[in-house]
Image 1: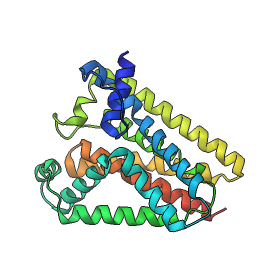
Image 2: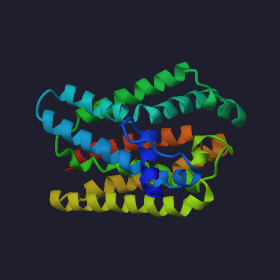
Image 3: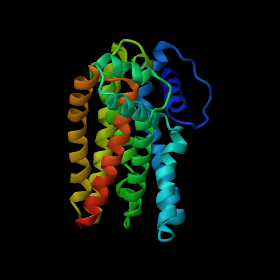
Length: 255
């Protein structure tokens, strides 16, 4: 029952998918991040349905749908983190000042520019997709698995906040094991797709992105904020997804 409740908490927190109400106890929250990649599976399924409906016609409308689907399903919770992070970094203030900006609900000019730039680049990359989109779909659960792995294993920037309520010591090992399992499954799927397509780039490109993303995130988060926060985790997820999409488009152009 606690795993069922943990799954419901993950879906209700990180998506707008209607689910039954769960008890928000410490024990249930402890394992919620184990199911975080499940939200990515839902995004991938929605993208697949959209692809089957529109592929081969009206590329710009297709790209717009692919760009908006993750926002619709997640409610923009991770985009909010990216926007807050952009405002904080643009302040060029101290660590404490940047952390204060992350908690500020107001939206600054740099947040708007970061959101607009991200959506424009995402739209352009989706518009360049011309082959089987099955190759990119594992990116959605993989980015969330990597984000969950970082959340429980990297130093927190502060002791309070929503992220800390999901990352106590007792659940760290379970979330780490679950995240590694999700990543292994995504890499296994990419391996199968690479074999079918006879294209090693289908596996190599996302594997390189995932291998580089975590150390880069750790370095920047520790340098600018002293650790990770929920907003930084959201920004990390968004940028990892975008990097995986870019890797797919570049890899596609190479075959």
